[in-house]
Length: 475
Image (cartoon, rainbow, N blue to C red; front, side):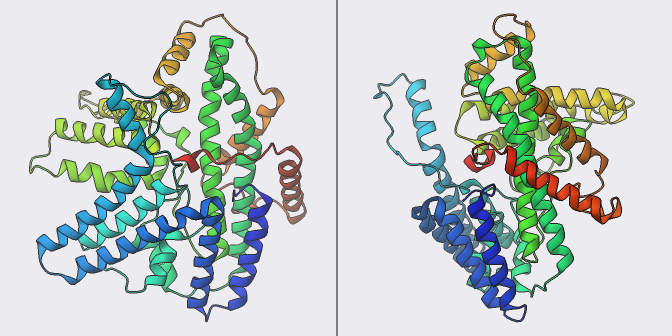
Protein backbone atom coordinates (compact mmCIF):
# COMPACT_ATOMS: atom_id res chain seq x y z
CA UNK A 1 0.00 0.00 0.00
CA UNK A 2 1.75 3.14 -1.21
CA UNK A 3 1.44 6.44 0.64
CA UNK A 4 0.76 8.09 -2.73
CA UNK A 5 -2.36 6.03 -3.43
CA UNK A 6 -6.09 6.43 -2.85
CA UNK A 7 -6.05 3.06 -1.07
CA UNK A 8 -3.84 4.50 1.64
CA UNK A 9 -6.08 7.56 1.89
CA UNK A 10 -9.15 5.39 2.60
CA UNK A 11 -7.13 3.21 4.99
CA UNK A 12 -5.86 6.26 6.89
CA UNK A 13 -9.33 7.81 7.28
CA UNK A 14 -10.81 4.57 8.63
CA UNK A 15 -7.99 3.98 11.13
CA UNK A 16 -8.01 7.65 12.22
CA UNK A 17 -11.77 7.68 12.92
CA UNK A 18 -11.71 4.37 14.80
CA UNK A 19 -8.61 5.36 16.77
CA UNK A 20 -10.02 8.58 18.19
CA UNK A 21 -13.51 7.08 18.57
CA UNK A 22 -11.98 4.69 21.13
CA UNK A 23 -10.93 7.70 23.20
CA UNK A 24 -7.76 8.57 25.10
CA UNK A 25 -8.91 6.59 28.14
CA UNK A 26 -8.57 3.34 26.18
CA UNK A 27 -4.88 3.47 25.43
CA UNK A 28 -4.50 -0.32 25.21
CA UNK A 29 -7.38 -0.56 22.74
CA UNK A 30 -5.79 2.21 20.67
CA UNK A 31 -2.49 0.31 20.66
CA UNK A 32 -4.24 -2.89 19.58
CA UNK A 33 -5.90 -0.99 16.74
CA UNK A 34 -2.56 0.51 15.64
CA UNK A 35 -0.91 -2.91 15.72
CA UNK A 36 -3.68 -4.52 13.64
CA UNK A 37 -3.63 -1.58 11.23
CA UNK A 38 0.16 -1.82 10.92
CA UNK A 39 0.03 -5.53 10.14
CA UNK A 40 -2.75 -4.98 7.58
CA UNK A 41 -0.70 -2.18 6.03
CA UNK A 42 2.41 -4.38 5.87
CA UNK A 43 0.56 -7.55 4.91
CA UNK A 44 -0.87 -5.90 1.79
CA UNK A 45 2.70 -5.68 0.48
CA UNK A 46 3.28 -9.38 1.03
CA UNK A 47 1.53 -11.20 3.89
CA UNK A 48 4.16 -13.95 3.86
CA UNK A 49 6.75 -11.65 5.43
CA UNK A 50 4.54 -10.81 8.41
CA UNK A 51 5.96 -13.90 10.09
CA UNK A 52 9.49 -12.53 9.68
CA UNK A 53 8.48 -9.17 11.17
CA UNK A 54 6.78 -10.85 14.13
CA UNK A 55 9.72 -13.20 14.72
CA UNK A 56 12.25 -10.36 14.67
CA UNK A 57 10.11 -8.48 17.18
CA UNK A 58 9.92 -11.46 19.52
CA UNK A 59 13.66 -12.22 19.26
CA UNK A 60 14.69 -8.72 20.35
CA UNK A 61 11.97 -8.47 23.00
CA UNK A 62 13.11 -11.72 24.62
CA UNK A 63 16.84 -10.98 24.17
CA UNK A 64 16.49 -7.63 25.92
CA UNK A 65 14.53 -9.19 28.78
CA UNK A 66 17.18 -11.90 29.25
CA UNK A 67 19.99 -9.32 29.11
CA UNK A 68 18.28 -7.23 31.78
CA UNK A 69 17.42 -10.14 34.07
CA UNK A 70 20.91 -11.69 34.33
CA UNK A 71 23.89 -10.27 36.18
CA UNK A 72 26.45 -12.47 34.41
CA UNK A 73 28.34 -10.31 31.89
CA UNK A 74 29.20 -13.28 29.71
CA UNK A 75 25.56 -14.35 29.48
CA UNK A 76 24.50 -10.76 28.75
CA UNK A 77 26.96 -10.59 25.89
CA UNK A 78 25.78 -13.98 24.60
CA UNK A 79 22.16 -12.80 24.40
CA UNK A 80 23.28 -9.56 22.75
CA UNK A 81 25.22 -11.39 20.05
CA UNK A 82 22.38 -13.84 19.49
CA UNK A 83 20.12 -10.85 18.81
CA UNK A 84 22.68 -9.20 16.52
CA UNK A 85 23.32 -12.51 14.73
CA UNK A 86 19.60 -12.95 14.09
CA UNK A 87 19.11 -9.42 12.74
CA UNK A 88 22.23 -9.37 10.58
CA UNK A 89 21.57 -12.96 9.53
CA UNK A 90 18.10 -12.05 8.28
CA UNK A 91 19.52 -9.05 6.43
CA UNK A 92 22.28 -11.13 4.87
CA UNK A 93 19.97 -13.97 3.87
CA UNK A 94 17.31 -11.88 2.17
CA UNK A 95 19.31 -8.90 0.93
CA UNK A 96 22.96 -9.82 0.42
CA UNK A 97 23.30 -13.59 -0.03
CA UNK A 98 23.08 -13.64 -3.83
CA UNK A 99 25.30 -10.56 -4.09
CA UNK A 100 28.14 -12.13 -2.11
CA UNK A 101 27.66 -15.45 -3.86
CA UNK A 102 27.94 -13.79 -7.28
CA UNK A 103 30.97 -11.76 -6.15
CA UNK A 104 32.67 -14.89 -4.82
CA UNK A 105 31.95 -16.71 -8.09
CA UNK A 106 33.36 -13.86 -10.17
CA UNK A 107 36.41 -13.44 -7.94
CA UNK A 108 37.51 -17.05 -8.25
CA UNK A 109 36.17 -17.44 -11.80
CA UNK A 110 33.96 -20.34 -10.83
CA UNK A 111 31.41 -21.79 -13.19
CA UNK A 112 27.87 -20.62 -12.61
CA UNK A 113 24.61 -21.21 -14.41
CA UNK A 114 23.49 -18.04 -16.18
CA UNK A 115 20.71 -16.31 -14.30
CA UNK A 116 20.83 -18.90 -11.49
CA UNK A 117 19.90 -17.84 -7.97
CA UNK A 118 20.45 -20.21 -5.06
CA UNK A 119 18.09 -18.10 -2.92
CA UNK A 120 15.45 -16.72 -5.26
CA UNK A 121 13.29 -14.48 -3.08
CA UNK A 122 12.30 -10.83 -3.03
CA UNK A 123 13.60 -8.51 -0.32
CA UNK A 124 10.94 -7.91 2.37
CA UNK A 125 9.91 -4.26 2.23
CA UNK A 126 11.32 -2.17 5.09
CA UNK A 127 13.68 -4.96 6.22
CA UNK A 128 16.73 -2.70 6.61
CA UNK A 129 14.72 -0.21 8.64
CA UNK A 130 12.94 -2.35 11.18
CA UNK A 131 15.93 -4.66 11.80
CA UNK A 132 18.08 -1.62 12.62
CA UNK A 133 15.35 -0.28 14.89
CA UNK A 134 14.99 -3.51 16.88
CA UNK A 135 18.74 -4.10 16.97
CA UNK A 136 19.39 -0.64 18.45
CA UNK A 137 16.85 -1.42 21.18
CA UNK A 138 18.70 -4.55 22.30
CA UNK A 139 22.08 -2.81 22.17
CA UNK A 140 20.77 0.10 24.25
CA UNK A 141 19.43 -2.33 26.86
CA UNK A 142 22.83 -4.03 26.97
CA UNK A 143 24.56 -0.65 27.37
CA UNK A 144 22.08 0.20 30.19
CA UNK A 145 20.83 3.28 28.38
CA UNK A 146 17.24 2.07 28.70
CA UNK A 147 15.34 -0.55 30.65
CA UNK A 148 13.45 -3.10 28.57
CA UNK A 149 9.68 -2.87 28.44
CA UNK A 150 7.59 -5.60 30.04
CA UNK A 151 4.65 -4.89 27.75
CA UNK A 152 4.80 -7.05 24.63
CA UNK A 153 1.96 -5.16 22.92
CA UNK A 154 3.71 -1.81 23.23
CA UNK A 155 6.96 -3.26 21.91
CA UNK A 156 5.16 -4.80 18.93
CA UNK A 157 3.64 -1.37 18.22
CA UNK A 158 7.06 0.28 18.48
CA UNK A 159 8.56 -2.06 15.88
CA UNK A 160 5.64 -2.11 13.42
CA UNK A 161 4.16 1.42 13.64
CA UNK A 162 2.89 1.77 10.08
CA UNK A 163 3.77 5.43 9.32
CA UNK A 164 7.49 4.69 9.64
CA UNK A 165 7.64 0.92 9.26
CA UNK A 166 8.82 0.59 5.66
CA UNK A 167 11.24 3.53 5.24
CA UNK A 168 11.85 5.16 8.59
CA UNK A 169 12.73 7.41 10.27
CA UNK A 170 14.71 4.81 12.22
CA UNK A 171 13.43 5.56 15.71
CA UNK A 172 15.14 4.81 19.02
CA UNK A 173 13.14 3.07 21.71
CA UNK A 174 13.80 5.80 24.25
CA UNK A 175 11.90 8.27 22.06
CA UNK A 176 9.09 6.29 20.40
CA UNK A 177 8.32 3.52 22.89
CA UNK A 178 7.22 5.87 25.74
CA UNK A 179 4.68 7.40 23.35
CA UNK A 180 2.90 4.02 23.23
CA UNK A 181 3.13 3.74 27.00
CA UNK A 182 1.44 7.10 27.61
CA UNK A 183 -2.04 8.34 26.75
CA UNK A 184 -2.49 10.36 23.58
CA UNK A 185 -5.04 13.17 23.61
CA UNK A 186 -6.81 14.48 20.55
CA UNK A 187 -5.42 17.82 19.42
CA UNK A 188 -7.19 19.44 16.49
CA UNK A 189 -4.24 21.75 15.75
CA UNK A 190 -1.85 18.80 15.57
CA UNK A 191 -4.19 17.04 13.16
CA UNK A 192 -4.28 20.14 10.97
CA UNK A 193 -0.49 20.39 10.98
CA UNK A 194 -0.27 16.67 10.23
CA UNK A 195 -2.56 17.01 7.21
CA UNK A 196 -0.54 19.96 5.95
CA UNK A 197 2.67 17.96 6.21
CA UNK A 198 1.08 15.02 4.37
CA UNK A 199 -0.07 17.41 1.62
CA UNK A 200 3.42 18.87 1.25
CA UNK A 201 4.98 15.41 1.20
CA UNK A 202 2.57 14.27 -1.53
CA UNK A 203 3.41 17.34 -3.61
CA UNK A 204 7.15 16.67 -3.32
CA UNK A 205 6.75 13.01 -4.18
CA UNK A 206 4.03 12.97 -6.85
CA UNK A 207 4.61 16.26 -8.63
CA UNK A 208 8.31 16.96 -8.17
CA UNK A 209 10.10 13.63 -7.59
CA UNK A 210 8.09 11.58 -10.08
CA UNK A 211 8.33 14.23 -12.80
CA UNK A 212 12.09 14.39 -12.33
CA UNK A 213 12.21 10.61 -12.18
CA UNK A 214 10.77 10.27 -15.70
CA UNK A 215 13.62 12.34 -17.11
CA UNK A 216 16.29 10.71 -14.96
CA UNK A 217 15.19 7.19 -15.89
CA UNK A 218 15.12 8.12 -19.57
CA UNK A 219 18.78 9.19 -19.50
CA UNK A 220 20.16 6.52 -17.13
CA UNK A 221 18.44 3.72 -19.07
CA UNK A 222 20.37 4.62 -22.26
CA UNK A 223 23.15 7.15 -21.50
CA UNK A 224 24.87 6.40 -24.80
CA UNK A 225 22.00 8.18 -26.56
CA UNK A 226 22.52 11.52 -24.82
CA UNK A 227 24.91 14.46 -24.93
CA UNK A 228 27.36 14.94 -22.05
CA UNK A 229 25.54 18.09 -20.90
CA UNK A 230 22.24 16.23 -20.88
CA UNK A 231 23.77 13.52 -18.71
CA UNK A 232 25.13 16.19 -16.37
CA UNK A 233 21.68 17.77 -16.18
CA UNK A 234 20.10 14.37 -15.46
CA UNK A 235 22.62 13.79 -12.66
CA UNK A 236 21.65 17.10 -11.09
CA UNK A 237 17.98 16.27 -11.45
CA UNK A 238 18.55 12.92 -9.76
CA UNK A 239 19.97 14.68 -6.69
CA UNK A 240 16.72 16.59 -6.37
CA UNK A 241 14.63 13.55 -7.26
CA UNK A 242 16.03 11.36 -4.49
CA UNK A 243 15.74 14.23 -1.99
CA UNK A 244 12.13 15.05 -2.90
CA UNK A 245 11.22 11.36 -2.98
CA UNK A 246 12.68 10.43 0.40
CA UNK A 247 12.00 13.67 2.26
CA UNK A 248 8.51 13.64 0.74
CA UNK A 249 7.97 10.16 2.19
CA UNK A 250 9.32 11.38 5.54
CA UNK A 251 6.90 14.33 5.54
CA UNK A 252 3.99 11.95 4.92
CA UNK A 253 5.23 9.58 7.64
CA UNK A 254 5.69 12.34 10.24
CA UNK A 255 2.38 13.97 9.29
CA UNK A 256 0.54 10.65 9.53
CA UNK A 257 2.04 9.93 12.95
CA UNK A 258 0.94 13.39 14.09
CA UNK A 259 -2.67 12.49 13.29
CA UNK A 260 -2.45 9.80 15.98
CA UNK A 261 -0.63 11.93 18.57
CA UNK A 262 2.92 10.71 17.87
CA UNK A 263 6.05 12.68 17.11
CA UNK A 264 8.69 11.11 14.89
CA UNK A 265 12.27 12.28 14.40
CA UNK A 266 13.20 14.85 11.79
CA UNK A 267 15.15 13.09 9.04
CA UNK A 268 16.19 16.00 6.78
CA UNK A 269 17.35 19.58 7.41
CA UNK A 270 17.80 21.05 3.92
CA UNK A 271 20.96 19.01 3.21
CA UNK A 272 21.80 20.85 -0.02
CA UNK A 273 22.38 24.01 2.01
CA UNK A 274 25.24 22.31 3.87
CA UNK A 275 28.68 23.94 3.62
CA UNK A 276 30.67 20.70 3.71
CA UNK A 277 30.06 17.02 3.14
CA UNK A 278 30.44 16.47 6.88
CA UNK A 279 27.56 18.87 7.49
CA UNK A 280 25.63 17.32 4.61
CA UNK A 281 25.57 13.93 6.32
CA UNK A 282 24.42 15.63 9.51
CA UNK A 283 21.40 16.91 7.56
CA UNK A 284 20.66 13.95 5.23
CA UNK A 285 18.86 10.83 6.49
CA UNK A 286 19.71 11.98 9.98
CA UNK A 287 18.42 8.92 11.83
CA UNK A 288 20.52 6.54 9.71
CA UNK A 289 23.66 8.67 10.11
CA UNK A 290 23.11 8.81 13.87
CA UNK A 291 22.57 5.03 13.99
CA UNK A 292 25.87 4.27 12.24
CA UNK A 293 27.66 6.88 14.34
CA UNK A 294 26.47 5.38 17.63
CA UNK A 295 26.69 1.68 16.79
CA UNK A 296 29.56 1.44 14.28
CA UNK A 297 31.82 4.52 14.20
CA UNK A 298 32.13 5.18 17.94
CA UNK A 299 32.68 1.51 18.92
CA UNK A 300 35.50 1.22 16.35
CA UNK A 301 37.11 4.45 17.57
CA UNK A 302 36.91 3.24 21.17
CA UNK A 303 38.77 -0.01 20.44
CA UNK A 304 41.95 1.67 21.75
CA UNK A 305 42.56 4.10 24.58
CA UNK A 306 44.47 6.49 22.32
CA UNK A 307 42.24 8.00 19.64
CA UNK A 308 44.38 9.18 16.73
CA UNK A 309 43.48 10.71 13.37
CA UNK A 310 44.38 7.51 11.43
CA UNK A 311 42.01 5.53 13.65
CA UNK A 312 39.22 8.08 13.20
CA UNK A 313 39.85 8.11 9.44
CA UNK A 314 39.73 4.32 9.25
CA UNK A 315 36.55 4.23 11.34
CA UNK A 316 34.92 6.88 9.17
CA UNK A 317 35.81 5.14 5.92
CA UNK A 318 34.54 1.77 7.14
CA UNK A 319 31.35 3.31 8.50
CA UNK A 320 30.52 5.15 5.27
CA UNK A 321 31.27 2.05 3.19
CA UNK A 322 28.77 0.16 5.35
CA UNK A 323 26.29 3.02 4.90
CA UNK A 324 26.64 2.47 1.17
CA UNK A 325 26.20 -1.29 1.53
CA UNK A 326 23.09 -0.72 3.68
CA UNK A 327 21.47 0.95 0.66
CA UNK A 328 21.70 -2.12 -1.51
CA UNK A 329 23.47 -5.31 -2.58
CA UNK A 330 25.52 -3.81 -5.40
CA UNK A 331 29.11 -2.63 -5.80
CA UNK A 332 27.75 0.75 -6.91
CA UNK A 333 26.35 1.37 -3.42
CA UNK A 334 29.59 0.29 -1.76
CA UNK A 335 31.51 2.63 -4.07
CA UNK A 336 29.00 5.39 -3.26
CA UNK A 337 29.66 4.97 0.46
CA UNK A 338 33.42 4.63 0.01
CA UNK A 339 33.62 7.80 -2.10
CA UNK A 340 31.73 9.77 0.52
CA UNK A 341 33.93 8.21 3.19
CA UNK A 342 37.13 9.29 1.42
CA UNK A 343 35.89 12.86 1.08
CA UNK A 344 34.87 12.96 4.75
CA UNK A 345 38.31 11.68 5.73
CA UNK A 346 39.96 14.41 3.63
CA UNK A 347 37.70 17.04 5.19
CA UNK A 348 39.02 16.16 8.62
CA UNK A 349 42.75 16.17 7.89
CA UNK A 350 44.20 18.90 10.16
CA UNK A 351 46.49 20.54 7.57
CA UNK A 352 45.15 24.12 7.57
CA UNK A 353 47.14 25.99 10.22
CA UNK A 354 44.72 28.84 10.72
CA UNK A 355 41.42 27.33 9.70
CA UNK A 356 41.95 23.79 10.99
CA UNK A 357 40.40 21.10 8.81
CA UNK A 358 38.94 21.38 5.32
CA UNK A 359 35.51 21.06 6.92
CA UNK A 360 36.10 24.21 9.00
CA UNK A 361 37.67 25.93 6.00
CA UNK A 362 34.48 25.56 3.96
CA UNK A 363 32.41 26.80 6.90
CA UNK A 364 34.19 30.16 6.52
CA UNK A 365 34.34 30.43 2.73
CA UNK A 366 31.73 32.32 0.65
CA UNK A 367 28.51 30.30 0.78
CA UNK A 368 28.23 29.91 -3.00
CA UNK A 369 31.58 28.09 -3.11
CA UNK A 370 30.83 25.70 -0.26
CA UNK A 371 27.35 24.93 -1.64
CA UNK A 372 28.79 24.23 -5.09
CA UNK A 373 31.44 21.97 -3.56
CA UNK A 374 28.89 19.87 -1.65
CA UNK A 375 26.52 19.61 -4.60
CA UNK A 376 29.26 18.55 -7.03
CA UNK A 377 30.47 15.81 -4.66
CA UNK A 378 26.97 14.48 -4.08
CA UNK A 379 26.06 14.68 -7.78
CA UNK A 380 29.17 12.65 -8.68
CA UNK A 381 28.44 10.05 -6.02
CA UNK A 382 24.83 10.09 -7.24
CA UNK A 383 26.05 8.62 -10.53
CA UNK A 384 27.16 5.56 -8.57
CA UNK A 385 23.96 5.51 -6.53
CA UNK A 386 21.68 5.56 -9.58
CA UNK A 387 23.65 3.53 -12.13
CA UNK A 388 23.05 -0.24 -12.37
CA UNK A 389 26.80 -0.92 -12.38
CA UNK A 390 30.12 0.86 -11.93
CA UNK A 391 30.99 0.58 -15.63
CA UNK A 392 27.98 2.68 -16.60
CA UNK A 393 28.73 5.25 -13.91
CA UNK A 394 32.29 5.62 -15.22
CA UNK A 395 31.17 5.91 -18.84
CA UNK A 396 28.63 8.58 -17.91
CA UNK A 397 31.26 10.46 -15.93
CA UNK A 398 33.58 10.37 -18.95
CA UNK A 399 30.88 11.85 -21.18
CA UNK A 400 30.31 14.62 -18.63
CA UNK A 401 34.00 15.46 -18.17
CA UNK A 402 34.76 15.32 -21.89
CA UNK A 403 31.53 17.20 -22.67
CA UNK A 404 30.83 14.53 -25.26
CA UNK A 405 28.76 15.84 -28.17
CA UNK A 406 27.55 12.38 -29.09
CA UNK A 407 23.85 11.86 -28.57
CA UNK A 408 20.84 14.11 -28.06
CA UNK A 409 20.95 17.44 -26.24
CA UNK A 410 17.59 18.01 -24.56
CA UNK A 411 16.06 19.97 -21.69
CA UNK A 412 14.33 16.77 -20.54
CA UNK A 413 11.36 18.14 -18.56
CA UNK A 414 10.89 21.70 -19.79
CA UNK A 415 8.29 23.80 -17.95
CA UNK A 416 7.79 21.08 -15.31
CA UNK A 417 11.07 22.25 -13.81
CA UNK A 418 9.02 25.14 -12.37
CA UNK A 419 7.55 22.71 -9.82
CA UNK A 420 11.06 22.05 -8.55
CA UNK A 421 11.83 25.78 -8.44
CA UNK A 422 8.66 26.42 -6.42
CA UNK A 423 9.48 23.59 -4.00
CA UNK A 424 13.08 24.71 -3.45
CA UNK A 425 12.05 28.36 -2.97
CA UNK A 426 9.34 27.38 -0.48
CA UNK A 427 11.68 25.23 1.61
CA UNK A 428 14.46 27.82 1.65
CA UNK A 429 12.07 30.67 2.49
CA UNK A 430 10.60 28.70 5.42
CA UNK A 431 13.80 26.92 6.44
CA UNK A 432 13.28 27.72 10.13
CA UNK A 433 10.11 25.63 10.05
CA UNK A 434 9.96 21.86 9.91
CA UNK A 435 8.16 22.10 6.53
CA UNK A 436 6.80 25.04 4.48
CA UNK A 437 3.11 24.69 5.44
CA UNK A 438 3.73 24.18 9.16
CA UNK A 439 2.99 27.74 10.32
CA UNK A 440 1.46 29.12 7.16
CA UNK A 441 -1.33 30.80 9.14
CA UNK A 442 1.30 33.28 10.36
CA UNK A 443 2.05 34.37 6.80
CA UNK A 444 -1.17 34.07 4.81
CA UNK A 445 -4.83 34.94 5.51
CA UNK A 446 -7.35 32.10 5.59
CA UNK A 447 -8.80 32.57 2.05
CA UNK A 448 -5.31 32.53 0.51
CA UNK A 449 -4.31 29.47 2.57
CA UNK A 450 -7.31 27.49 1.42
CA UNK A 451 -6.76 28.57 -2.16
CA UNK A 452 -3.19 27.24 -1.87
CA UNK A 453 -4.37 23.95 -0.34
CA UNK A 454 -6.91 23.42 -3.13
CA UNK A 455 -4.35 24.37 -5.78
CA UNK A 456 -1.89 21.77 -4.46
CA UNK A 457 -4.61 19.11 -4.28
CA UNK A 458 -5.79 19.83 -7.84
CA UNK A 459 -2.21 19.74 -9.16
CA UNK A 460 -1.50 16.46 -7.36
CA UNK A 461 -4.65 14.78 -8.71
CA UNK A 462 -4.53 16.31 -12.19
CA UNK A 463 -0.87 15.82 -13.02
CA UNK A 464 -0.04 12.64 -11.13
CA UNK A 465 1.75 10.03 -13.19
CA UNK A 466 1.19 6.29 -12.68
CA UNK A 467 2.04 5.58 -9.03
CA UNK A 468 5.70 4.86 -8.34
CA UNK A 469 7.04 3.31 -5.14
CA UNK A 470 9.30 5.46 -3.02
CA UNK A 471 12.98 4.98 -3.87
CA UNK A 472 13.95 4.02 -0.32
CA UNK A 473 11.32 1.25 -0.15
CA UNK A 474 13.84 -0.98 -1.98
CA UNK A 475 16.38 -0.58 0.82
